[in-house]
Image 1 (cartoon, one colour):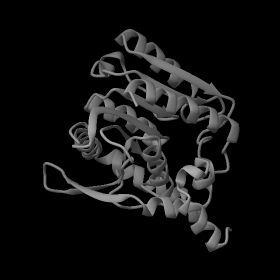
Image 2 (image 1 turned 135 degrees about the vertical axis):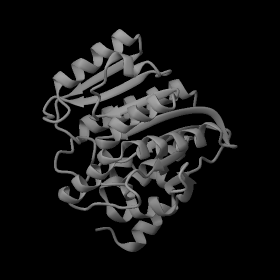
Image 3 (image 1 turned 90 degrees about the vertical axis):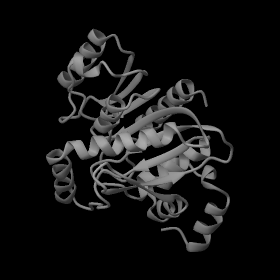
Image 4 (image 1 turned 60 degrees about the horizontal axis):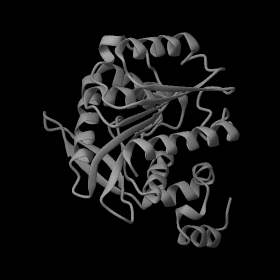
Length: 260
């Protein structure tokens, strides 16, 4: 654990002074990055409130990226990624699909994802609300991308189908879609998948590749000799080299398609 004076010194130098993986792996750094974000609130059609965490870049107007968390919920790590995107020059919004709850155990995370599975329409409406928020943001350029991991990887794609955006990034998320379902996509999709992943496996991804081709949509898929959640520095399946390569590809893809 870093001494508090070292934490303050490093954060004082700006998040950009630290590699993102370092920030995500250290709870103190992740918390400090998360605390720099602004909590914003939206209202669904039925009056229910939904929340998100917003990070603004130093210079505007800027393109925007909507981030969707893993099955743990909107925790400090995903907020820290939003802070990093803002450092790159994006309006970054980490949305919450778990009603403000954050899990710390797999059983807790499974329960949270079960609630979303029982009421997917609320998640669709929430994604659409925040996508539209970014498309019309006063400080934005109107160009928006989505990016999600695991549970959020699948919802990154779902969000782009519900309210089409300029670029979509999927990290090992559920992509079992038919060609007809993919018709609304208006921007290219980038997918990161792991050869050892028993959940988001090759048959599923191969089906997605075929469906995207049938739908006439742009897709780039990368495979990594790794396991599910390889990009999460806090997990046991973290693969530093593959995570860094996937992040480089993600940032390049978004910069190109969002015209950063």
